[in-house]
Amino acid sequence: MTTEERLEKLERELAREKRHNRRWRVGLLLVVGAVGIAVASLPRLPVHINEVRAGSFVLLDDKGRTSASLDMTKDGPSLHMVDHNSTKSLTLEVAEFGPSLVLCDYYAKASLDVSKYGPSLSMDDMKGTTRVRLSVDKEMARLKLSDENDKQSAALGVVTDGATVVLGETNGKRRAQLIVSQAGPALALSGEKGYPCATMDVACQGARLSLQDENGTSRIGMAVLNDGPVFGLYNKNGKPRVGLDVIQDDTSLLLYDEKDTIRAKLFVTKDGTVLNLCDENGSPIKDVSHDKADVSAATTASKEQRAP
Image 1 (cartoon, helix red, strand yellow):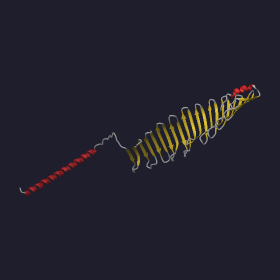
Image 2 (cartoon, helix red, strand yellow; image 1 turned 60 degrees about the vertical axis):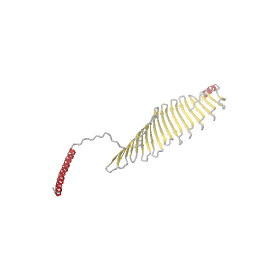
Image 3 (cartoon, one colour; image 1 turned 180 degrees about the horizontal axis):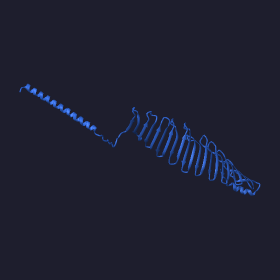
Image 4 (cartoon, rainbow, N blue to C red; image 1 turned 135 degrees about the vertical axis):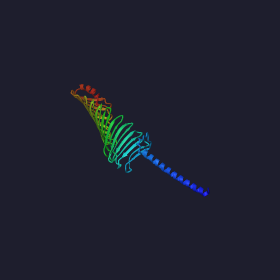
């Protein structure tokens, strides 16, 4: 066989092999396609995922805007949701100090949190000023209301043995306080400096009223006790200068010097009138009485002084 014949034979065999391989490829594609169609037609089985790990999850609306996010921050996990205008939102966090929930819109904000001191609820206006705050701690349950400028406030508190209402300024100056405790009710009115200027209370001994100056020093005191009324005038240091009381049918007037020593005593009883003038130590130096028998009784009574 010549060389030319050998080349022709080789070309024929190559052509036959190409046709054979082409038929195999077509068949293989048909088989793969049939298998794919069969698999696609099978019912889908549910896919179970036991755990998903991520640092953040973000939910987008149909326009690609963030509507909700779940993040792990340095303080703890945080869930944040907003509307499509980003004017209303909800934030739920768990931080080191405790869990908190914050609700916001364009006009106001409300927040609820729990710390080691207890739960608290705050409501803010559109300026961010806290107008209402409700809290509970180990000592007291309290409610505080503030004006829009955060200058005036009203507070209500309840403790173990009573309740209190405070009206005043948010800088800590109390202007009026009402207390009801086991000892009895009490009312205190304060001046611009925050010192009480008038106090009144009712206890088991009776009712009392005290008027103070701008520094909180008592200048006038009066009381209605179980055995009679009492009235007193005091100097700028709070020392008594005049005392007046009525015990049953007896009336007494006491005058003090600047050292808080009684210098004059006047007693009016059903038996007569007695006047004692005293030295700088408070000892009687002169007695004036229309009935000398009353001097001893008056001296004894003067030792039982009462202060309102």
